[in-house]
Length: 396
Image (tube, rainbow, N blue to C red; front, top):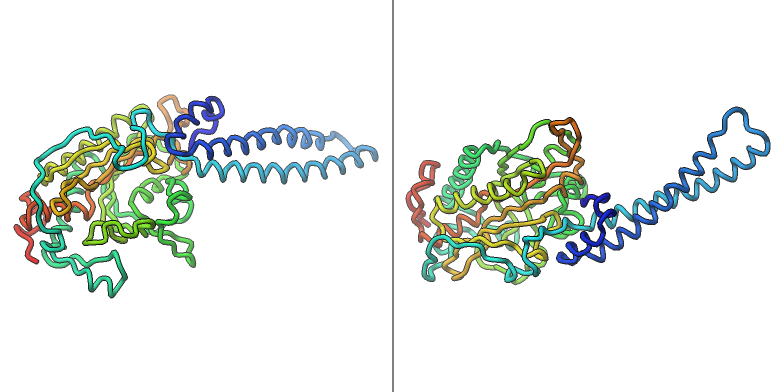
């Protein structure tokens, strides 16, 4: 969540920044509820103080204490209600965007930073090159599911191991996290309440299937006090997304599916190091894409297109010959202190003070990399993946 003390001190700055995410109204509603709560606090404290009578009260004082208790009970109920309303609005206020994020709220508003590699000519779609059992998966699980079979599966496995190996070389500790988490982890990372419609829920168990390892890696240290920063992790997990609102989008092939695998980079760091860490994670992602020789571009995502937790996000979009356009295959976000504050994570500074760390996340590899690789190389497999068990060529 945002720093409420800082928001009270400089509401105009927060409001202007949050307006770029379309959240100025939620911010103002939160401030109104907060003002109501703050006005009630001294009144409640004053009545509580009146109950502290030294010695045995007189009959008159007993009568007065009864009236004070009745008043206090009413005001305490009002205080609880005001705090609940304030916190409900606070949960809906996203992280303010970084000033360097461009204005706008769509993919078209993103700022292109650079390109690498030469886009290839139009060619067949990935399902025509690799072996993806889409019809059988639809019979088994419904639409937007697919089997990866044979050589195609081996290349996918090599990609994950390749990404983990590179992440390890850059100081990230490998993690295989849970994919089922409690509600507080979804709220803590900022996916609830705004992205709730995209999350699969197991109501009977009060658990949720994560759409990214980011949730589990952020929750790894929830409520803890960290003694040493930075902490860097690389999580591999299967991810699940409803793709709510994606009706009619990317219905062909495996580009937009409900289940996929992913290697996620995650960092906890001191606030004055997060910008540098963001650039470092992006550099790792670019190193991976270049090692596979996939043509790509890097974009700075528009403020209104950022998720609730992100202050700034870079996307890497690889070239897809079948679509003759760049499509997102990875992103990296700086969520500043937003997630750590919601999750109750702090760290001990050199002078022993407790502060809120910044958290960052970035995708090392997802299944989309496999799709772009198949389309760009028409079944040939880069040498870099063969040491991780990939075949020289994918045979359908």
